[in-house]
Length: 64
Image (tube, rainbow, N blue to C red; front, side):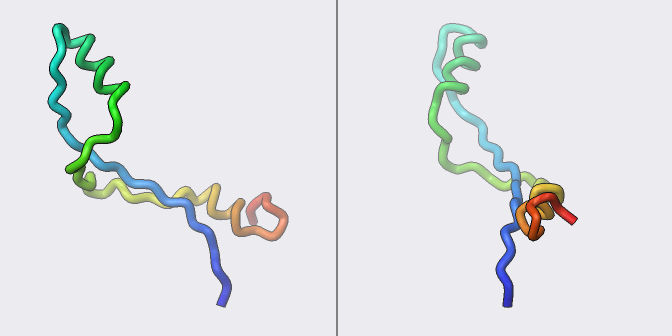
C-alpha cells in the first residue's frame, strides 16, 4: 500500500483577554502573544489543499 502526503488545514478560535491602556495596544499585545490554550474548532473549516496535494504526490512534482 502506498503512502500519500495530503496537506490539510483547519481553523481554531478563542477569545483572548488582554489588559492594555487602549484598543490599539490590546491588538498589538494579542499579535505578539503566544498561542492561547482552550481554542475550539471552527465548524466546516477543515479543507484539503488540492493543488499542493497533487504536486506532492505526482511523480514529476508538477501535479497531474
